[in-house]
Image (cartoon, rainbow, N blue to C red; front, top):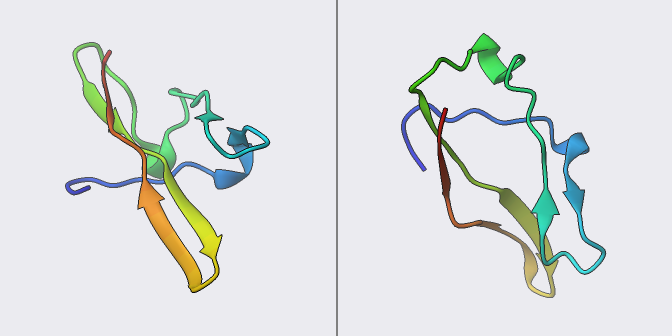
Length: 69
């Protein structure tokens, strides 16, 4: 993670019951921070999640997904 990091609203993510996958359809007309998508732009997405473990909460990131618009 680096560069221009922006976060989508976490209330709209739809995790599976077992927490093994998550789906999200971003509204590319309404990006965080007021950005916009133009033809030829490359965006890289990752899912940042928190887990409640026996030793306390931890966080992890999904593998990155690179998308060319």
